[in-house]
Length: 342
Image (cartoon, rainbow, N blue to C red; front, top):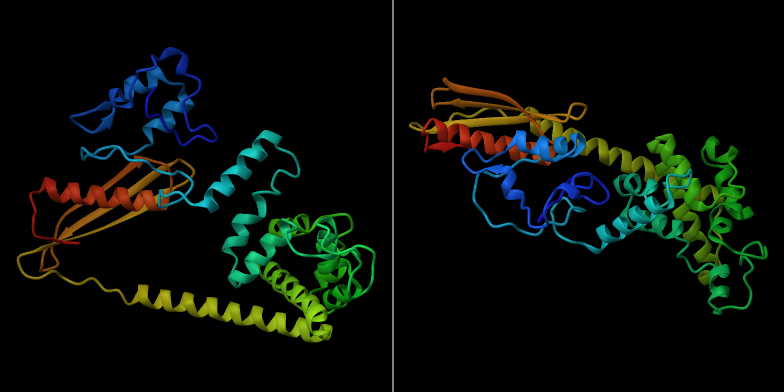
């Protein structure tokens, strides 16, 4: 079947029904050209229930346009190296099967990139999880240095876990930080597993504190090597706490500004002789439906018409908004209105 793409990981293609189809079968055969809708009876007949439900939730454009390439791993539809990297990890994890460690590659990343911390700290955590830092242990493996001992405590192997957690100088920092970190012990766990445990706890402030403190411990280690200076543990903890507080205040201020902007937005009538249309969309993730509301008003604020509808659609907010805009335009067109203000 040519051009088939279904929102069903990981093949994104129909699997259960392919044996009944000829290789030249096209998707256009399933679409009613007059209504720009799926031929529901034909779809449910040709495909399994799971695949048919997925197909019927895909919106169809009423405009006759040429097909275009779309990269499914980004919201923009354009290919990026970062999205390909995440896709590679996702596919590798699926090949390994669902194990207790299956989230190692993809578990922390979504929460990590959304975390309210400096981008430099996010990149630091990412590299730490991949063990991509020039610790003495890594440098010895690459034959850059002969001695893998920690430059601070002289323990035999300076790994990323040792630098950020096991080294006595690092433990001095954590002992002055959150009680949760004081009681925790990394033991045989890797750094990425430690981070995953914090992500699963869903405690954003704790995760912020851990990320920024770990980042400052790494910078402190580098100061010892390149400047011969070891910052006092209390100074590291104080600096980390202050940065977390500043980030939280900044986040609250941003939310307050957005809320103020939203509450101050009053409806304004269009100029005389024109019609104004407002629309909105809601998403029901449980039943995979999208609700749309449209209202038409004239320059006197009089309501001319309203539209309320629901549609089986994948519960994606961007898709819901686009679908609402489409329905608003079609609604205006059905009334023959041309001078419309959006």
